[in-house]
Length: 171
Image 1 (cartoon, one colour):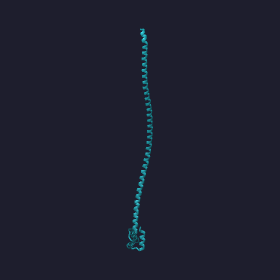
Image 2 (cartoon, rainbow, N blue to C red; image 1 turned 45 degrees about the horizontal axis):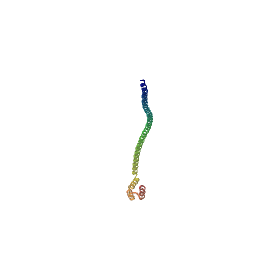
Image 3 (cartoon, helix red, strand yellow; image 1 turned 135 degrees about the horizontal axis):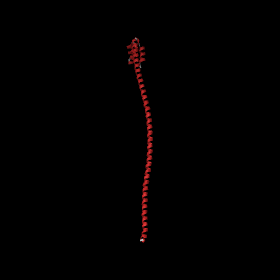
Image 4 (spheres, rainbow, N blue to C red; image 1 turned 90 degrees about the vertical axis):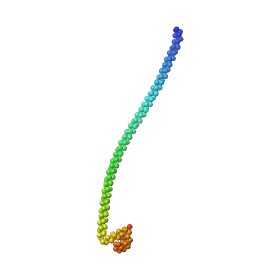
């Protein structure tokens, strides 16, 4: 039995060493797989961290852009308020100018009315003077296109006076 024992002992030890070696190899393979998985997880964490940092940068840039846009909107609002004030002043000035033009138009109409009254008064005075009555009538006839002989007959004027009136009022 000792013989058997000496014979089987190296085989059993070899077999045990072989099993131990297989167990160690399996453990090493498993640890490599776990290491690869851990490396993949670490790589994923790094890429997530980089993506988060980039996202934070973009977020900060958007915040800065939004702040700049708000400042620009504020500036535009101030400019709009200034333009609205200028428009309001312009409208008020235009209203004043329009009122002044209306006043001038009324004054002009009143002056024209006075001129007409003065012309009528002059006409009445001229018609009251018997000598100027003939001259006024002759002037109207010339303006209406009457001939020299018609003026002389209608107004009883001498030829020289009729020619003078004809040359004065013929236009």
